[in-house]
Image (tube, rainbow, N blue to C red):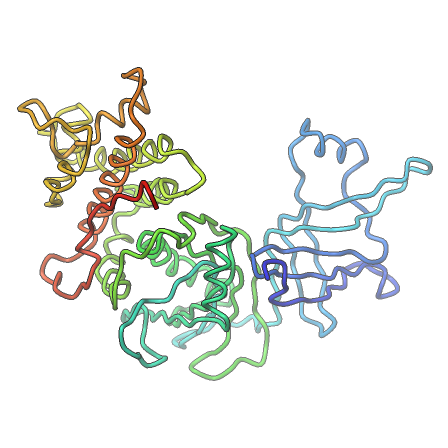
Amino acid sequence: MFNDAITTESVLLDGDTDGESGVIDLSLTESGDITGDVTGDVEPSETAEESLGQVTGSQPPQFDEFRGETRDGVSVMLEKVITSTEFDGRDGTAQVTGITPSVVVFDSAPDDAFVGEDVTIEFDVMNFRTPNTWFPQPDDTPLLDRDEFSIQSHRVDGFEERMQQIKEYRRSLRTATVTLTHSVNGPVDIQFDHASCTLQPAMWLIAFVQGVFPAPVRARITAVDGDAVPWTYERWMTTWRDDIGHAFSGGRIDGANDVRVFLDHGYDRFVERADQYRYKRCISWYLDAMLRDRTVNSRIASIAAGMEVLAERYAAHDETVGSTTADKIRNLVTSLDVDVIDLAAFSETFEDTPDGTREYFYSNSRNFVLHNERDDMPFDNLFTDYEAAITLFRRVLVNEFALDEERDRYTSLLDLSPTDQRFE
């Protein structure tokens, strides 16, 4: 399934004299790879020495760019291409046998800008788990709705089987289409760029909720003002982050309509504060902390790093906060009104003394992992601290984006507790 093609296309390269001397058979796979098999003669842009240097690592990779058109006459651009080349040592000739582009753009769209029109862009997305609803919802129920845009999601055929494949093999796989409709003035490239920028904050917030980053691999403009377009504008891309996280094997923390509510609450705040508060870095560390093939020590280190990124940003806006890590963590947790009493009790390393910082209950494990402050730490203690600390991390991120006045709209995202999974 992973290597099956979502779509294929033959591209005739520019500059060919007989019409078939340089043909690339492109394929976009279900796991998001773009491959290209070359038939005919395509000369490499680098010398044999340069190619060997790239293979051995003595020279950085050289990216090529190719232009051409499909057999239907649609213009094609292949960007950031790495080529596979065969050299004949006897006569010094060389031939490209395969290509791996990062981006492929198919474009037969008109050059005119779209003004005052609703443009619909459909994204094929890997690792996207649709909202968990307890009752049927209409197909046109938005994932997120704003005056400027609307986002909807739909499962692909075989969704449940694909989810099981991700869990079993811990590899990315296409699971959904996400459709964005907006009204933006500009030609097709501006439409795509604006849609991608609009979609990205939603993907980061969904990545937190589901524990895996959803990555678009193909985008197509499908309609203008609701009417199907008679031309083509399509991009294949491997440029989005591809983070498998816990591969959906860690259970879900959302229930019913929680994803839609969380997006509705958090989207605007994420857009306004992402750079200032480094949300992407925090969520990246969170996803790293759930990689099951890593040791508990390294996962605790990821939790500590993510928590401290956000704690440092909160402390930077409050001159009364002390300079120690404990001071900054306490300030973050209290600023967001996060309950830690049960988490400190769950921890097997926290000592509830006048000198202890309950909000920083995992400090002994954190310091053992990062600073080797102890000769040894029992695995059971590390594991319970990990479970409690990642629950704290989740509560912090939920409270960062949830609206206090609408907390009754959530089903389970506000009711996060640590679980002892040592024997599971």
